[in-house]
Image 1: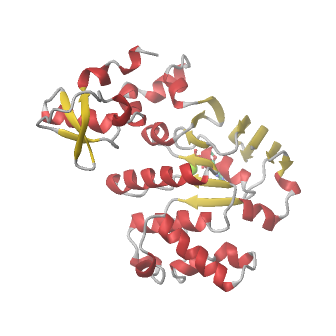
Image 2: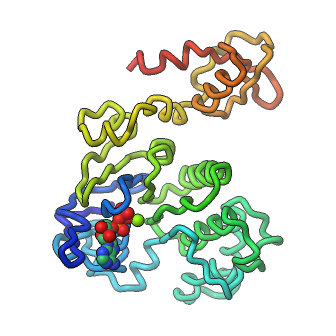
Image 3: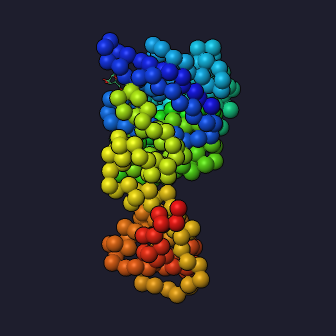
Length: 310
Ligand SMILES: Nc1ncnc2c1ncn2[C@@H]1O[C@H](COP(=O)(O)OP(=O)(O)O)[C@@H](O)[C@H]1O
Ligand SMILES: [Mg+2]
């Protein structure tokens, strides 16, 4: 668990983080959203002790971060930033190995770990392990950035707009892959973004910040029903469309109908993509396909009515 208790940080007269208190549960993926300058990065940097809070206490698993020694803290926190911060003169293997080296693992174990992680982030080990950052695309470099953060198997991952500089298609892939990894590893993750779409899609919980303060910290579903004016204005009108990407075709299709329709959707797609396809094709129903077989039908009506149940 990560706990912030009345944490304040000022830069001269500028209050970057203002009496912030919150608790993040172990194994949760928590999204920090808010306008530029609202204090997201400052909060992350205080948690990993890159900068010091002026007031308040930050605890990890009940222990003040200043009671950990530096190496111990580095080992328990992985950090991913935009544009990766990969060292240009080091190849992929060396970049991933930085923290394990610091921890004096033996060379075989370091190499095995590097290979395991390159594979985990969806790249082919033999073609990538000796590449230099300049030989990677933006998306590939971000993947290696994630691999590097995971190297010493930290309990906590702090990610500061990690996919912010990646084009939309690659960004969606990276989001999906990271969610898959997170499902498997169940790290305690703080993921900073200014993209409410990304937050809604990925988060177990969302912390909405404004001017250094926490406006709301809840599940995406609860945030959607918020009465907080700032939160509502931040979400905007497309909220209900946005949230559809959390719902899977698999769960909302009708299974009894096996008739093959003109348009098809994969069972693993989400309802937001499915809805977009229905609009594009001008259809009210699509056959749901899994491994080439028709598994049922997805109806526009069942998507439209989704929020009527709860
Ligand atoms: N090193 C710094 N020196 C002076 N002001 C800073 C520094 N870092 C951040 N700030 C200020 O603190 C506020 C919060 O910044 P930051 O945490 O980076 O916001 P965010 O990540 O949400 O965009 C901003 O007003 C920013 O200008
Ligand atoms: Mg920032």
